[in-house]
Amino acid sequence: MMDDEGRPEKPVDHVVGMVLDALSIEELEARIVVLEGEIVRIREAIASKTATKSAADAIFKL
Image: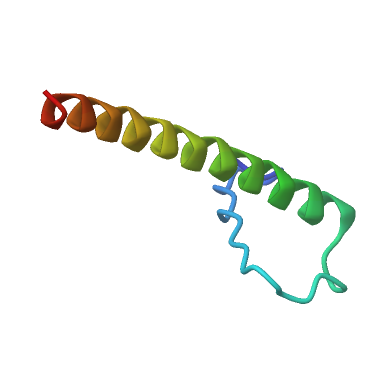
């Protein structure tokens, strides 16, 4: 994405436990979007690993 002056926007970095007092509402909302996306990505990884483990368990129980 680009800012109002045509420059690329800096990616949002978030550190769990960081002080949030100095962040604007817009910055906080951007962090929520980033974290929600990360939650989806992690859940997909868990689902993939679960499927792989289930398949391996099925093979080795034969």
